[in-house]
Structures are given as structure tokens and as C-alpha cells.
Image (cartoon, rainbow, N blue to C red; front, side):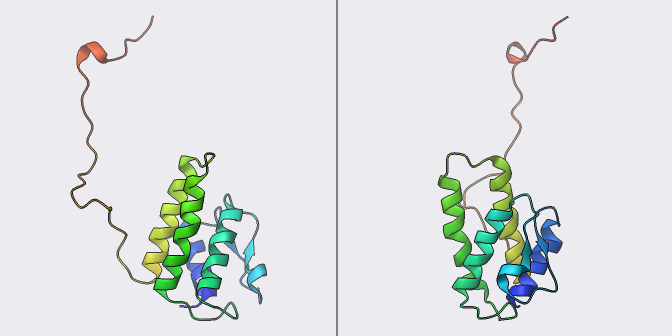
Length: 133
């Protein structure tokens, strides 16, 4: 997979509202159009992928290991910011899943192997909200 192919893959997986690729671009700076919902974040992530794979051109081959390793520091930086919202966290998760799928890898597992899926816990009658009027 090349850097350009990854960008197109992400556009197809995440949608053009998040990532819009200029397919005629010759340089990495021109590859992504600044029209997405998280365009600064996507630019930062793609720049990190480009650098970690030591790309010299947008058609340079990239590997799964350096690509996933490049995403982690950006993710940690974003998650440490007090202004990060749930939408951004979900978007980061979507990028991770899409990148893993691009390389044919399985989705990341939870850090705790004993984690059970979430369950809805019924509330007792006295804790339920009462309808007014």
C-alpha cells in the first residue's frame, strides 16, 4: 500500500465529510483538502504517517507497523487535551479501525482481557423519572 492509497482508503471508509482527497495531487501537502470536520487532526495524523514511514513521495510504500505507531502519539496528545469531545474520540477510533482494515489486521482488542460487553441495568421503580403533567 502507498501513502496515497491509504489516504484514498480512509476517504472511502470514513466519508468525504471527514476526509477529502485530491486525486490529482503530486505533493503530500496537496493531497488532503481542508474541508473535513477534523481536517487539522487528519493532517497531523497523515503527516505523522508520512514521516514514520520515511516517505519521499505520495506514492511511496508504507508498512502497517510504522503507520500504527505514528497514530498513537497523536492520539495520546489529543486525548490529553481538556477540550477533546466524544466525537473526536470516536473519530480517532474509526481511523484506527480503518487503518487496520487497510492492512488486513484485526481490530485492536481491549487492554483488559476480562472486559465484558456493556449491559443495560434496569432501575428500580422508585428511581425512575416521573412524567410531569
